[in-house]
Length: 243
Ligand code: PXP
Image (cartoon, rainbow, N blue to C red; front, top):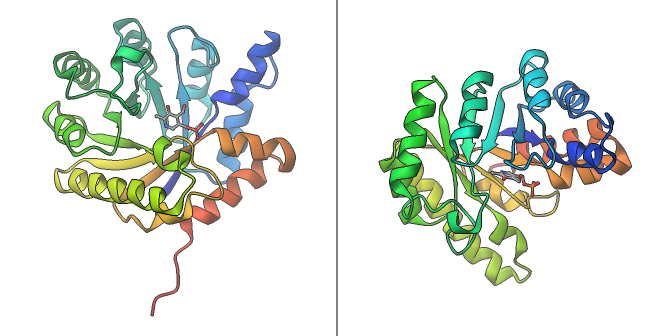
């Protein structure tokens, strides 16, 4: 059954808007856990615009779901990761020059730097996923730098409006997921996924986990976090009747 990782950055964004202590992402993580999610995702940005180091430390100690830390391939952030020891680090681009044209990490273009970062994190006992576009060259490069997993960037898929464009993006995701699985990489997907566009993706058997933030937190504003998580979990776990 595919897993749901909930990204709680936007709870912290709301807190930072006033610079106070509420809403607390740590409390959000506990509610997400109670609602039955399979993991917590946070992005510690170099500019600390939402999640703070304090959040990460407390989350690590209090929430007993797998913790997926998204971060740039930067030594200063790696130091925090090596202290906190999340269950997974997902390397993501934070600056334009780290991107490929569509927005995922340019693993093929920045191979040496990314491989060194993967090694550093592995030496600290932390598995590493790479957030890449559904591009076969990036999948092969991820394998070459010894990543454990990839997260397929679904932003382009999510932004398409016409069915024909969406089918093309879906096909790219299918091919990338298949190649990654064949190379022994675990596969997850995320960015821009919501209650309307998730369903077609769930037919891709290779995708083991979905990491979703904005749509769940937005829905939670109106229906509460518990219901927002459960509704997404239901969509992800839905299996069409056979035959
Ligand atoms: N996965 C990764 C690697 C991301 O960087 C993000 C955005 O922080 C997400 C998933 C979640 O994206 P969204 O908030 O659009 O659901």
